[in-house]
Amino acid sequence: MEEMKRQQRKRADDIARKMSPHLRKALSAESRRKAGGSGGGRTMRILLEVDRRPSRGWVESLKRGFASRGYRFQVLRRMPRLRLVSAIVSIPCLRTLCRHRRVTRVHLDRKVRVRLNVATPSVGASALQSRGSTGKGVAIAIIDTGVYPHPDLTKPVNRIAAFRDFVGGRTKPYDDNGHGTHVAGDAAGNGFSSKGKYRGPASGAKLVVAKAFDRNGEGNSSDIVAAIDWVLRVRKKYGIRVVNMSFGLPGVSRCSDDPICRAAERAWRSGLVVVASAGNDGPGPRTVTSPGISPLLLTVGAVDDRRTVRQADDRVAAFSGRGPIAGGRTKPDLTAPGVGIVSLRAPGSAIDRDDPSARVGARYFKLTGTSMAAPIVAGGAAQLLQKRPRLSPAGVKRLLKRGAFRLKAPRNAQGSGELDLRFAVK
Image (cartoon, rainbow, N blue to C red; front, side, top):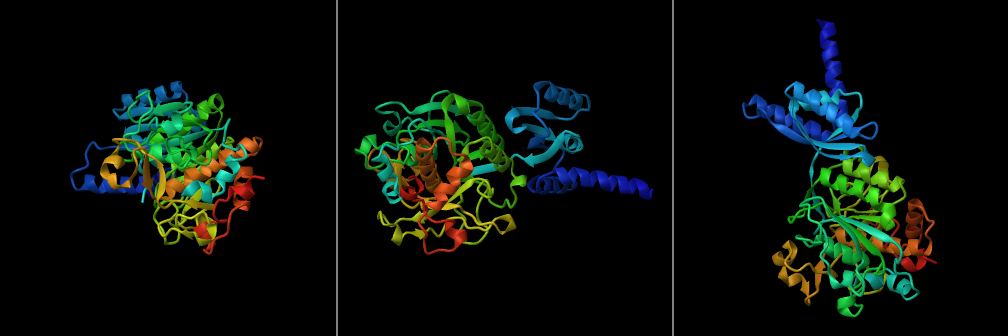
């Protein structure tokens, strides 16, 4: 009897070990509902992490096996480059999957939100643009709410090189929220509609846009990792060197507990500079959101530039996420302007309708958040890669940090300081 109990405890421990903390918490809540008589027949959206690429045949064999046992196993997507499968499963199926020898981790498919709460001259980008460094020949991938085909991105030539919709399946670029369009302009707007007044650092770069968030700025983890998988698939076709992620999950302390963070690290190791916003949950410590908690990624906080080009009067924004992260490591890595940033407007989008007072003329819109700071750094990275195309992601990160302007703030508020491309790109 004691041996049987010991084996049962071991099986339970093995199952729990493969579950992310958020999945364990959700499963515990589900068990309480079932005990109260309200949880029968419930299912969960999950992400399976496996030990090697999940082939179509392997997934089909799983489906047949679970069907024969009466378990629900509905596959939503395979993401072979990231070794992930998203699915809707019944609770008995979930427990069985956790015992499968090829399954290394099971995550809850959580909801993620985009992070909202005179940038270009103040970070030295204009000086580089005047010397011909505009990110030309470099593509920046934007994973966000989509992109509106704004004149600052499509004239005099269309620089939206590719668009993929993981929410609605549409084929032509659109943005029903507006956040992604603003982010695209922060990185690569060319100021066509403002005679050059409002432009991003990489005004000559191409954009590859993945829509993974809906009209309300919400997205499933599975859609976001599918977008990352797609970026990895098309990176060579479009010349992608930089990926911007202006979104985050709070309450994650380790990258291993978040499939988005794991996927972002895989993209980094494959040779892409991944720029992540630090989140808007400051000013307390340990408020950097995931995937910005990854030690690898280039994590960006926000400063208030006080509408001047002088960096000496800049201050880290109160809302900007602070470190340290797990292990006492410093985060963010850099800061950039993120308060009152004027960029591209997506007419009729959710944020455009919700806040008409933020419109700047007919073509532009003003937003605040680390979501705006991150793409400014992404654009700066594209400028740097135009000049030095052989740089690795670690090399780009090192040079941008080395050239940063030190602010009067703690390291876990500003990292190495505020982006200053004049000293990073020589």
